[in-house]
Image 1 (cartoon, rainbow over the protein chains, first blue to last red):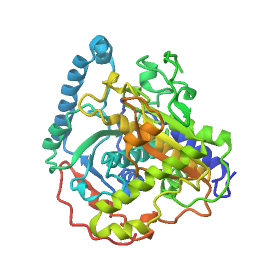
Image 2 (cartoon, one colour):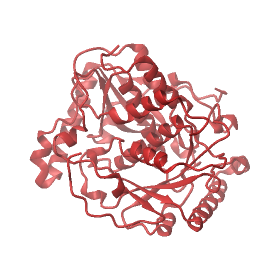
Image 3 (cartoon, rainbow over the protein chains, first blue to last red):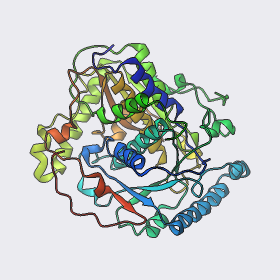
Image 4 (cartoon, helix red, strand yellow):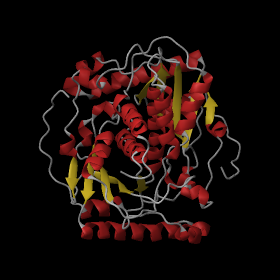
Amino acid sequence: MSQHAYPQEQIDAVYRAIYERRDVRHFVAGEIEEKTLKRLLAAAHQAPSVGFMQPWRFIRITSHDTRQAIHALVEKERVATAEAMGERSDEFMRLKVEGILECSEVLVVALADRREEHVFGRRTMPEMDLSSVSCAIQNIWLAARAEGLGMGWVSLFEPSELATLLKMPEGSQPVAVLCLGHVDAFYDKPMLSIENWAHRRDLDELVMENQWQELADHQDQPD
Amino acid sequence: MSQHAYPQEQIDAVYRAIYERRDVRHFVAGEIEEKTLKRLLAAAHQAPSVGFMQPWRFIRITSHDTRQAIHALVEKERVATAEAMGERSDEFMRLKVEGILECSEVLVVALADRREEHVFGRRTMPEMDLSSVSCAIQNIWLAARAEGLGMGWVSLFEPSELATLLKMPEGSQPVAVLCLGHVDAFYDKPMLSIENWAHRRDLDELVMENQWQELADHQDQPD
């Protein structure tokens, strides 16, 4: 064990949050205290970022009308997604995929404008700024779970339409509608596993050595 | 406080990992036990993924020659990046940006092939699979920090060249060379802050309400 390791109960707490975090779509009433929300945003801001560019921007939605308008955009995309899905269309439409109108807080997370000024770590892969924002969102997710709050990441929207709604400048891009709030209970498995949409693969199928190996064809099995 | 909140010491442990995680480029000798590496990979596999598609693939590099070849690709891109940087080129070349040859374990993390089969949450933003992989990497990062191990995410490479080296199939894409290993000490601030490459912005500059607001022009200040 490393001399820099945390005490075992702290290590366990980190893994607990990692294992118990869920993509939540079912919320119950209740407010999130300002200081809690601030802690979650501060945790996001501690994420790694490529070249330390900190490309994340957060738009807190406090307007009822704006929340309704975001929900309408998501609902439109939900239907368009179902149409693109072919044989799983009906099954998809029966899933609950977001809790925008029920949750306590809606945050839109966006990539900043003027990102082209940042070349460090992005010359060949400019999309690394999305990776940084995603790490920031994962920080919120884990911190929220520890705080007993649920979070869902909704990506069912046309980004240009959401950008227009929120008067976002050219070059910026919304990447997430985050729903944060209280829950009756956390799902004991991912909701899409409970609903038999997909199941967790064996880790061994995903780890290779030194070069790509053809993975066995995956058989869905409940985890 | 939520009834589902963890005990305060567990909440504190999650925030501790979030705040003390660093992008590490300075490693010291020492092996990572197999069971520790397995825990880190299992933590990655607990990440959220869009439509539960689990797009992450991990290639563990155990071949000395392959590690050297990866390092050569990164070194080539480091020079190309410096050339693209203009006035900060010399400053960039003085930074230590990776520890590929010194770290205990190198993992290449990639997006899987056949991702086009997954439409859920990706019809308008197919890049959401990169977000999922990034959340998986953040899980490794936080778990490693709790375990006392350092990690660096290197994105300085031409993905098509690394894909060729690792015999990756069409449709897949490497997104990270992860360096994992032991450290003398964790930086007390991000290394790029210590080196005055950039500094952490005030969180207040990054949070808006209901629509985009022009942010004050940022003045770099040590954090």
